[in-house]
Image (cartoon, rainbow, N blue to C red; front, side):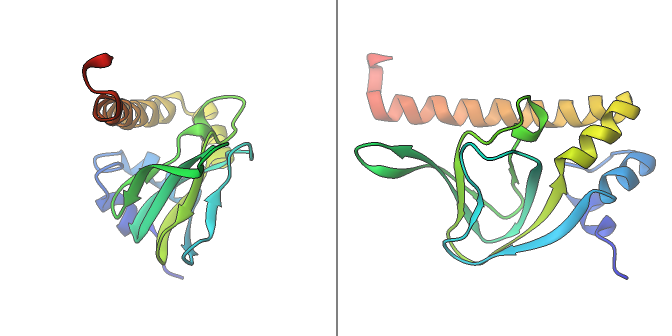
Length: 153
C-alpha cells in the first residue's frame, strides 16, 4: 500500500516537521478528487478537513443575495485550503468549488484535533504554520478591498 508520507514531507507546509509528528499527520491523510463544479465544502457545514491542493483550482466563494456566488479567492496547486477545522464551532464560512478537475490531499481535522490534544508540540507546530497562512490570506483580502474601494479605506 502506497503512503502519502513522501508527498507530505516534501510539501512546504509540512517541511521540517519532526518524523514523529509527520507520521501522526500522515495517519489523518487521504487522496481526494473533485470534478469541475463539485463542492469541497459549503458554508455552514461542519468543517472537519483541510486540503493540500495537488493540482487543479478551487474557487472560494461567498453568496451575495443580489449577485449569487461571488469568487473571493482562487486556490491552486501547492496551496492550503481551509482552517475552520481549527476554530470552534468548526463550521465553514465560505463555499469551495472545484473550477477544474482538482486532486488534493484531505487531512481529517477531527483526527488531527485529537492528536494535537494529546501532543501539544504537534498542535503548536500546526498553529504556527496555519497562522502564517491566515495572515497571508488576510493581507490578500486587504489588497482586494483596496482595489475595490480605492483610497476610501
